[in-house]
Image (cartoon, rainbow over all chains, first blue to last red; front, top):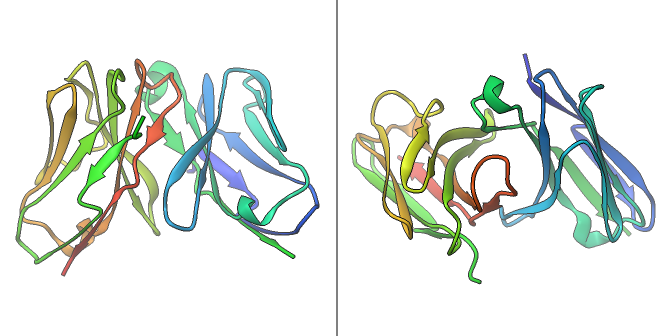
Length: 111
Length: 114
């Protein structure tokens, strides 16, 4: 089964609205990273998280290791936020200390 | 800081040919990772190096795929006798010390095997 499950798989947002993406883990994640892949294919790191929360501009992310999930909140969505969002978990020795990626959430922001 | 550099950006090769992909990590980063991305499988870990030493190659196909890191400024992924199912975007990433650090990705090499 999927070790890192992302939801929703796709999302359309009107510019200026808010939404949240979620990752559920079936591995004992110790750290989580969120990435945005733009339409050209470049992967940009958004957050690196140990359990807790971080905020950067209109983005806020949380990671709860006990409940095995992470969220990415987007506030006041803009057109340039469009792309595919990936979360990835690292689970120490149980995952070989490598990042395990979710399948991604495709976000389209429209006017 | 130029970020992670990957060359070539695109490669088309015939079935049975060899393909070599290059990655230059961010200067000062000691960990280098290789991933493969396809529509069907998504982003898959292949292998990683720390201080040029191979640490984990559990994601590498057992045959035809090999990776090296001869010096701290570049790594190569070589695919021998390429097959159409090898077509994918191959992504390289680097981080300061290892998997538990923020990973920075290169633009990828899009490989098409005809």
